Every structure is written in C-alpha cells, then in structure tokens.
Length: 118
Figure 1 (tube, rainbow, N blue to C red):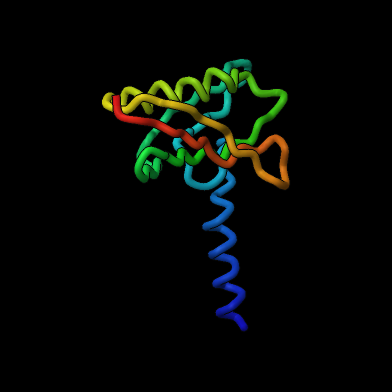
Figure 2 (cartoon, helix red, strand yellow):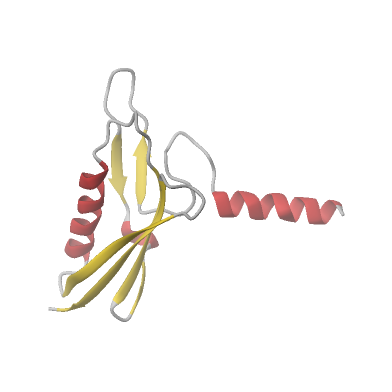
C-alpha cells in the first residue's frame, strides 16, 4: 500500500510538473519568469521538447493564461513559431493550432504545427 501511495505521488508530480514560480506546468518550450516588483514578465523559448513525425510537430506549451499577466500571449505564440522556423529552415509552416485543456479554458496544452518541405 505504501509503495502504491509513493508511486501515485511520483506520477502526479511527473504529470502535473513542479509548480514553481513560472506559469508553465510540465514539459514546455516556454519558460516564463515572474516580474520583479513593478516590472514585466519575461520568457525564454527552448525547442528541445518538440516532437516531430513526418509533416507534423507537437510543441508542448503547458501554459496557463492569467488576466493580470504583463505578457502579450499572441506575441509569445508568434515568437515560438518564429523560433521553430529558424530552427527548421527547410520547413514551411502550412498551419498551426493551439490545443486547450478540456478542464480549464485558460490552459493551453500544446501547439500543433503542420509543415511541408520548402
């Protein structure tokens, strides 16, 4: 029983991610840093978590949207797409879409990108 409880705790932590100062949870290409007093939030993009199969890529976001955020989330998404294009100069993005959590309307799970060779 104790082993089951420990295993469930580990799985819960692995699935939900560590709830730290950032507004992302779990694997994500995005790392958001809280604003210092009176400042703006900043973010960095790391494309190492992207999974690509054929002409499709899964870009994990694990991003929760907050109304009081100083970020322009549209700019964040476009910056991720721009970095993807820079990282893959031989691919042309044909379409992309955000996937929202079924349980939380302000939580985006991932960005799906369809692409083709240039």
